[in-house]
Image (cartoon, rainbow, N blue to C red; front, side, top):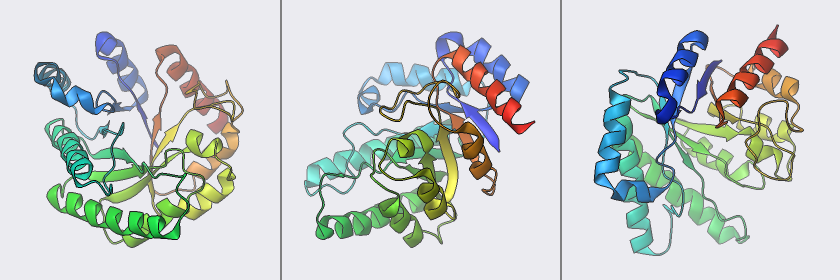
Length: 253
């Protein structure tokens, strides 16, 4: 289990030191809001600073706010694809190993026709992206999906794509109406990346491990059953990341 953290450029020396001490990867998080892509000078400065770290095999969280790759509105679909492609191009520049995107599945739409359309169109667009970026892994993450079934159906249809995988966000799954057992068991063949933090089972709080209601021992046991998985501690505060690393170390002793 390789662990990753989210670095903060304003305190990058501290994060690099932590990375070296614990052999941590980085997951770059600045691109989650697509509007960042519109400010070329800020974006170029960001890319330059991260490139200067001379790292490889990190991951990047791609855009997700307002992104809909399967919209019935052609213009929304086109701009969403443009934003996603921009994320992947930046990941290439930073020598990342993979990029995370959200399902952005509209859970309030209950019709079977929407479900079928979402799977069909998602398969089509991710195959296109995988062909365009053959050296990058693409991980699709559960957002506030009610259960793992749509993500499972998508992953099953893309199981022959060696660079496609599921990013299981354990905290998102924890606040769904479906037990974590079902999430892990249903998605186990497809999980390549995990987002991990704690919460109160009501809101996505990104707490340090042990500060919420999540059964950390159980989660780590399930993660250790997975093959060659990477795990992001999706926690923003440095002190909470250090606390979480100590919790993991204690549990695994």
